[in-house]
Length: 345
Ligand SMILES: Cc1cc2nc3c(=O)[nH]c(=O)nc-3n(C[C@H](O)[C@H](O)[C@H](O)COP(=O)(O)O)c2cc1C
Image (cartoon, rainbow, N blue to C red; front, side, top):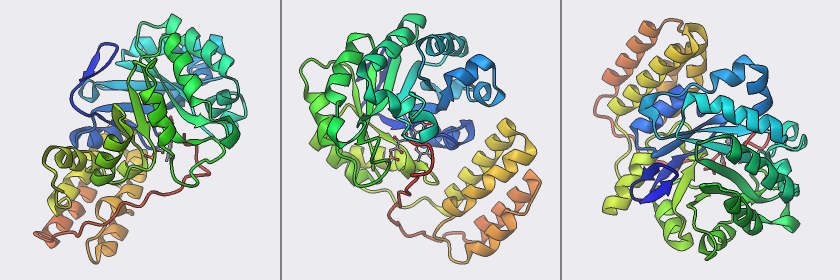
């Protein structure tokens, strides 16, 4: 069992990574239904929370069925982070995560996100300020270091543990790498194997299959694995990994019924949370992923992306279900996209 403050996670936990513009409540709902053990919000600007910016406040929305859930904040200033932590407190998540990994310029070069990796003393002060201003368990998500020459994650892990963080998630890349190359998990394993480290260490980077999860779990000995891009358009990854860990067998690809069901659930939640117009519009990018592999689906998809009412979309999804009833979608490898330009940690 893995313990983070008061949270107890059974077995080998699979975490849904925080992802800006992706891991919102509708997306989290379908990941939760498919077995994500611990989830995080998108990252939230501490300055935005203090200014009461609508976008930042909206990201604080969390629901009971999502528990355990963490809220992630970022910022480069002790007072702002401490104030933001107090604001987060009121929403009563299970944990508060600090982002020290976002590599995009507008965040990292203002001294927040991965920018803090250049200055460990500052990182420690920021973390300490957050820990002292909240009763929630505080966790951190970060990268190996700023660049190839400054992979300081071993020191970072010890010092952040010393100021009281309760878990650390490490993306096996430096800030300079953005998403290039392969994530290097050997340093994550070094942190995990450091006898001084007693908090859970979660590995992150490039996990895209049940087999890779088990291979990395065994090879690197981490306490759990965090999954980002592989879950986009494929929330079934969580249940597939859990099943494979339990039985050693691969589940067949999701059925057409399941694909339609996830599309409907995601749509419903999207409209509930974002309102009709935005909810329907933002949902459009998801259909091709959820219905991928069905021959001739383009014709249905072209219709789905023009509709403006929930009932109309649901009716086309019902047609899809009938049209492809019993069709077995072949298992295809998940493609991890490069999001270099996007804010991603
Ligand atoms: C679209 C996108 C948005 C992201 N936004 C965040 C974020 O808000 N906070 C964060 O800590 N990481 C963010 N990340 C990084 C992921 O949490 C994760 O560390 C990274 O994608 C590597 O994991 P993966 O190979 O499983 O995708 C983002 C990644 C992507 C692809």
